[in-house]
Length: 221
Image (tube, rainbow, N blue to C red):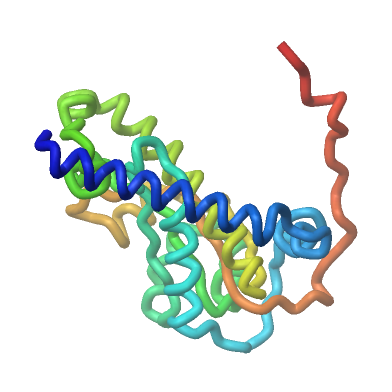
């Protein structure tokens, strides 16, 4: 690496550190109501109003998701927004009967998937050095990395959508094989889970279900 490139990297790192320090100085934590909105009092929804979801808000959600951390910045998550009648009919083939109405009445159903060829994009995503050799010829490592980090990005998607005022209802009651055949045939993409997305009809909610306490599931080592 040339001395000029090294100086550029140093400047970029210093700028990144300054951005983080400035942000923390302006806002060190979220307030309780913001945390309630995205997690503590947030609910999984199953019924929807007919209010549409604009493409622009989907683009903002993705912008937020893309900023979230993934291993070596691999960014394997891929998202299909199912909104058309044709798309919903194709997706319905994969769903368990109880989930069909939930999907059909949601303004958007997001297929959260991951790309098994994510590692081929590393020269762009991780320009510090070429690390494609870490993945090439290692299908098990590729699959675990793609699935783990794609799942993380799906979780970021749900939180980002809630932060922007939308409601979500994640679903796993479907055939991944059918979804992959319908939407990803001939590609390196594999489906993970679904997210119904829109503005909920809260009258369908029931009480929030129990959660484990800290002492029941957390420990120190």
